[in-house]
Image (tube, rainbow, N blue to C red; front, side, top):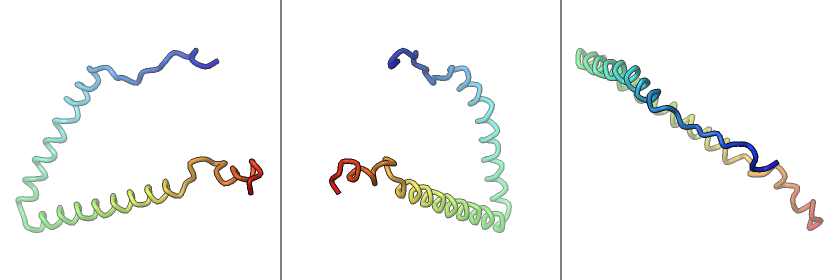
Length: 90
C-alpha cells in the first residue's frame, strides 16, 4: 500500500562527523605538510610530484569521459524503442 512505509532519514549524528574530522583531518594535514617538505628537498622530487599530479589528472579526466560516454549511451526508458510499435503508430 502506498505511503504506509515510514520515511527513513539518512542524517548522521553530528558526533560522527566531528569524530571523523578529528581522526582524518590531522593525518591529512600532516601528510600534506610533510609532502611539501619532501618536494622542497630536491628538484627531482618536484618533477616526480609534478608527474604524479599530471598522471592523476589525465587518468581522472579519462575516467570522467568514460562515465559520461557510458551514461549518454543509455536509454532513459527501456521501452523507449518499442513505444511507437505498442501504440500501432509505426
